Length: 153
Image 1 (cartoon, rainbow, N blue to C red):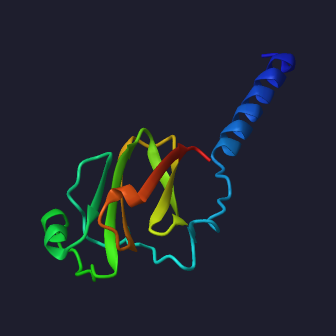
Image 2 (image 1 turned 135 degrees about the horizontal axis):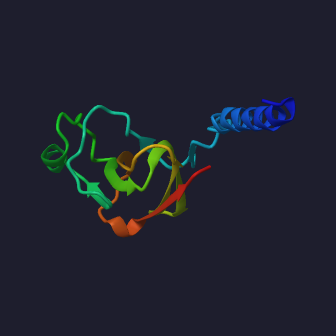
């Protein structure tokens, strides 16, 4: 084989290797804004609790008593529902999930907005997600606006 034929092949192999190496690098994430809350509003993301709630996908459920909670969440801890309501939100991502970022803001008392940003990871399979939030006591979902955004950032 002539050296003139090897140089283009070697160049192509190096370029392919460099592209593969760079495509494996993950962008550095800014998790600083992961939980933006208003100081005057009581909000707690309890999604990392071990209990799994039996609710359908693409559903928002408001729970206001421990009896209702026990029917949908196995091994759920007791919650003081005199001051809080439990908001359960679930959905399905068309790709895998890298990160879930939440923000809870007061529009006007007693109305609130919950923003959920699902950062997808395109190399993983579709998966369901479920989030649980303690929010200020409310008896109706009309007081809480939920915005869900899917992105690949």
